[in-house]
Length: 132
Image (cartoon, rainbow, N blue to C red; front, side, top):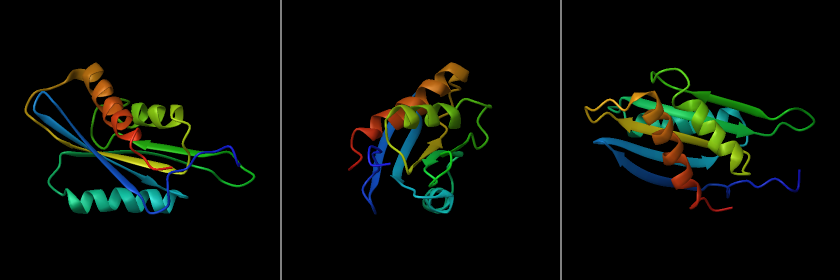
């Protein structure tokens, strides 16, 4: 487990991206278990209650077991938000990490490919600033 990279404890990295008038706000933080990930998601919902979507993905290690990976599209078309976010997290080399992307719909539909790119870009753009 020593080769695993985890975000710094207590850190919250925030990023923002605008695509065709839709605003994507990304929060990435440490989540040592599912409860911590759900807490971060809940905080995002409280902070941005009027947002259309609060999509999420998280990965955490379980000692002597398989790692846990979860994602949610939160009302976006199936497979267009949570799974792409999870793929970016998994490819980053980080573990015990959660990401929430808050979307304010800008009135222009992005299509399924556009949504996949937008959510992936939102997470990957924010990952570079995550303290380790």
